Amino acid sequence: MREHDDLTNVLPGIAVSDRRVERDRRRRRARRRGTRSLILLLALAVVGGGAYLAYSALRPTIDSLTASKDYAGAGSGSVQVTIADGASGRAIGRVLADADVVKTPGAFLSAAAADPRSGSIQPGTYSLRRQMSGSAAVGLLLDPTSRTAERVTVREGLRANEIVALLAEATGRPVADYLKALKRPKALGVPALAKGRAEGWLFPASYEFEPTATATEQLTMMVSQTKKVLAAAGVSERDSQRLLTIASIAEVEAATPVDYAKVARTLDNRLKIKMKLQLDSTVSYAVGKRTITTTDAERARKSPYNTYVVTGLPLGPISNPGKAAIDGAVKPATGPWLFFVTVDPTTGETKFATTAAEHAKNVAQFQQWCRDNAGQC
View 1 (spheres, rainbow, N blue to C red):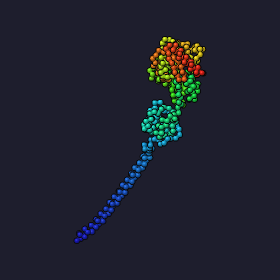
View 2: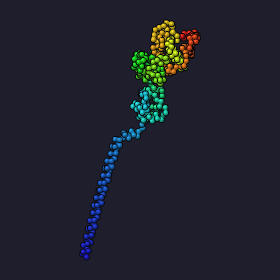
View 3: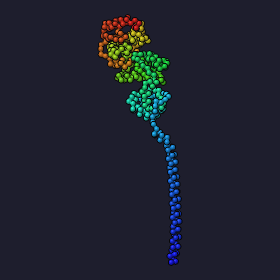
View 4: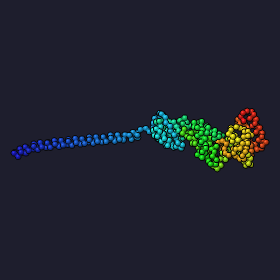
């Protein structure tokens, strides 16, 4: 029995020891869980702080990516923007964005793509507003009233001195600036065969000049247009001065495309037989007048432009002809005429003749018109 008692006495001790071990184990596990939780919390804090710092650093980029690339509305204020000749849509967009008219070049491109009229946007200087929507900017660029360029219409048949007076009045530049420019025809693009004169090379048309365009730049534009018209008509530079001289006479002497071509043929017919042209229009130019008829003294005056004195064409053009007169000189009508006279200057009716006797009858009709319209001849 003692042995049994001893065993009994030992077992309770073992049970107590096991319970203490178990408690220690639980405490250690709790401490480990707490440590892991603290580490996790610290890790989350670090990650969260890093994310915040990253977001703060990237926020401008994120905002730029998510923000609208177009302004809203019609804008405000005023800004002058110049669209260059031949500028592409992308180039126009950059110009507008640089001036803060539109928010991005893409805003303009998108609006232009949506408006089929945008292909007709013209070069020039425009008065626009800042921070406009792309569609509003396209609308103003298509509005002629937005352009600040000076518009001048030069009609056919004017002389160079009359043209510069017209340009000066329209643009506000001094006439002296234009006269000075005319003295340097080479700088205007006038070929050497014109013998230093721009007469005939200033193409009549409607022009839009930028406010900053100089007299030289304006006249150069007109000369350039004459060259384009001649080239389109198949006229070589070698023949250009002669053709412009004939066209300039036709422009002054006739009133319709049909008559331009008939006048050109009449001049050719006379030139072929070396018959003097005897044109009052060339005499008027020589004496610096604008009259239908001339006096005996004026017709006798020596001048390389007086076709009563010289044989052949005058020294150069006597006006600045338009496209119809140029076309008439390029392709003269077919006919045997040697004479012509405008019998009714009011309507421009012109009669052509092959004989002196027939021409005399036509001249009598013109003289009757002069008697009926005193002071106009």
